[in-house]
Image (cartoon, one colour):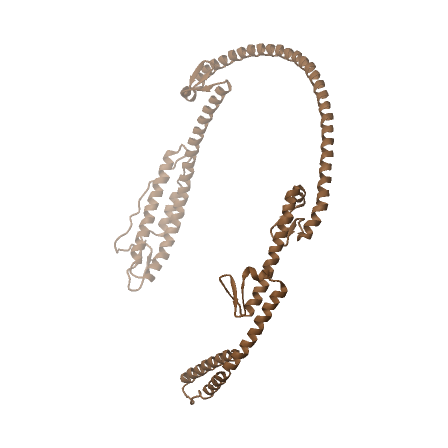
Amino acid sequence: MTTDIELHDTEVVDNEQIHDAVLVLDAPALAPISFALTLEEIDKVAAEASKLTIADHNDRAGYKAVYSFRQMVKDQRIGVEKRQKELKRPHIDYNRSVDQLAKQLVDPMKVIEEGLSKQEAVYEAEQERIKREAEQAEALKRASRIESVIRLGGILNEAAYDVFGTRVDLVEIETLPDDKWGEIYATLEEAYTCEQIRLAEIERERQEEQARLEQQRIEQEAQAKRLADQAAEIERREQELARLEADAKRKEQERERQAEQDRLAALLAYRVPMMETKGFEKNSRGFYVFRNTDWWFDATKIATLSDEQFADLIASAESMDRQRHREQVSERRSSILYGLGFTLENERYLHPTAELTEEGVCDLSDADFDKVVKLAGTHNKKADRARIERLKKEKKAFADYLRVYQSGSTVGFYEQPEIADLLDRFTGAIRQVIEAYRAELNAL
């Protein structure tokens, strides 16, 4: 049921005239705070709004009445808020008072608006639900029709479904009324039934052919089994023969392998001791290494060398041993010669007592080398005594000079720290130089 209510817009007061029914808040030295509405008037508006209702989704008149009345209330609220902003401009304290009074007016008006808006929202939501349900029902009907056509074997081809030669457009499926669609669907079912009968006849013929082929397969399998059994027996006999031949061959190979292992073991028993006497040693990995060099052999390689190759190996080890001994002798003797003052020029060791080639140094016997050393040592001792005697007088004079220089290099006392520090560093450096030269003098 719709209630007819006469609507009246309330005019917002824009001048300075204040009506007795209007709320007024005085402020010192400011214009009075006034609004075009009172709380009593708002209560009347609320009472009128409470009488407005929307009966259901078909109540268009009720909806318009609620909407118009809410727009009027909204206009009044906007007028109050506009007046609020005008009154707030002069002074912040005055504006705060205006806000407080305006809030008393605006809050109940917002409550009125919210109540009316909720009724509008319920109406609009119901309209949307009805529209949505109608669309969903239509979509379900289209989907159901298409699904039923597909169950009959329909195939989509160029905006139409083909059911075993009977075509129906997709537009017809979606738009035909139920009675017309029932007639078309009956035609499709008839085409489907005919096709099923045809397929059943084909299936019967296929099964008969399958039964004939199955009988033929059984007979062929029986014949194949007989042939396979015969072939298996032949293969078994051939495999047994091959096994016996392989076993005999394996035993022969085992005898040959054992004989070869015995032969290699005998060779190792002879060759390894000989290698050890020539300087080969067995390391932690089982390799035979020549005197900590990178020349190594494992047992297999040693055993598989021919006699000629093994003889060459021993000869090479002996040659390397001789060369190693010669290098050690050369290194030891050259160190002795350098200690005696020999110099090496153009591969020859030179000394006032002797002149030797590098090869000659190694070729000398120990007795002959000792003679060279003794002769050079005797010469050096004589030369040292002569040199000491020759330098004795001047060494003493230079030592006295250093002593006198050091003792006479003192200076007076300086009070300034910068000069005193520079002097300390200077005298320290002089002392170090004198000590260095004194050490060199003593070494002459």
